[in-house]
Image (cartoon, rainbow, N blue to C red; front, side, top):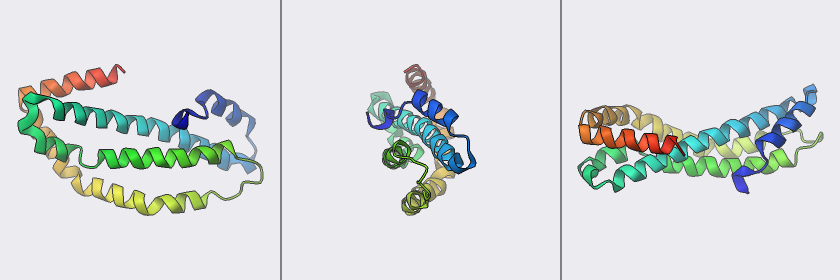
Amino acid sequence: KGLLSPTSENLSKKKRKRSSSVDKRYNIIVQLLEEGREYYENLRSLCKIKTKLLREPKLSIYAASIYNIFANVEDLSQYHKAMLNELIPIVNNWSSSTRCIGEFFNKQTPLQDELYETFARNYVSAALSLRKARKFKTFDKCLREIEKEIGAQ
């Protein structure tokens, strides 16, 4: 089950039942889990796009640009998967006696800061590489086809 447990339906039922101020933290954690799953799926889609672009023989001359555009997307995806897998037991084992979730966030911060610092440092370069690569019809056409294919899944 992994990232699929608890289900969104179960989370929604639990969320409705927990409306007291004591359980607001629980609702925040559930929302973080739900949004984290969506973000993780988007990162996985980017990983698939990168892989498909790199496997396209017509695009081999753009490999350096592709690596630059998607610089640390796999690292971000792996990080978020691990974070979600740590968050699920917190949600599943939540009780009225659960008081502190700061430990979870403190554990995440150093690696998250490092990953997103790398992302931020590369952002302008990646955006420029994407803009330049999209000027070439072959690259742009392949990228659009892959985006449609990934989006349809």
